Length: 101
Image: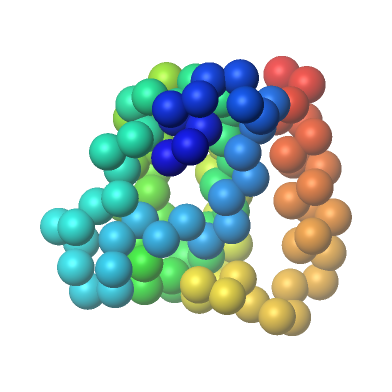
């Protein structure tokens, strides 16, 4: 929310398991600030995250006018899975690519 109100504050946002809505309450979306985000954003989101499905995330990120990357972690919940071999390196590489684009 701070970055939406302060353009230029950072060069990019890396959001791990963004809580799109409270579990079981998809009508309470946390996206009001998305249309004001002009900073590149990368979301890393598990396919079983109760805070938002991948379909809900795909729809929500369309509200952001800046470059957006949605990295899907298959089979992971909100904790992104503790046994995800290589996930940190994959996320770091993709985030750096987003910054270069």
